[in-house]
Image (cartoon, rainbow, N blue to C red):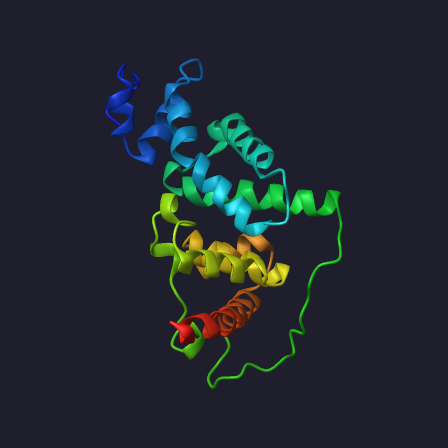
Length: 213
C-alpha cells in the first residue's frame, strides 16, 4: 500500500486484496470499513469450515460470530498480512478445540494401528486413496447444491473426529501439512497418516454411490 489513507469508496475496498485490507485495518483503528469488508469476505468461509468440523452442533452461526469477533479484536496483532488465512484458520481451530474442552463427549474413534489397504507409505500423495472427489474445487456458494456435494458432505461428517479435522483443513482450506501440524499440535507424520486414512475412508464411503452412477 502506498498510502495510509483508507479508500473512501466501498467499491474500491471490494477490489483490494486480502493483504491490502488487513494493512488498512491495522493502520486506522477508528476506520472500520476495511475490517467490515474482511468480515463480509470471509464469514461464509468461516461458517463452512466450522460446519464441516462440527456438523452435529446447532450453534454454528454463534461460533462463526465468535471467530469473526476474535478476528476483529486481534487484527492488529497479525505481524504478516500475507499469512492472514493461516492466522484466521488458527482462530477457527483454537475456538473449535476450546468448545470441545468445554463440552467433552465420546468421540467416534478408530485404531491408528489399523493397516492401510493399499500399498506404499502412509500419506503417499500418489496412493489410490488420493482419488476421491476434490471438494476444494467447488465454489463455496454451490458446495451443498449438487447430489455429489451432498454425498461428500455426509461422508466427511461421518468420519471420526481426528480424521474429519485433518480432511477439512487440507481439502477444504488447502492448508499445507506443516500448517495443519502446527494448528493441531501434531507431528508431520501423524498428519500425513491421518490424512491418508481419512482419504481412504472417504473413498470407501463414496464407492457405492460412484459405482451406482
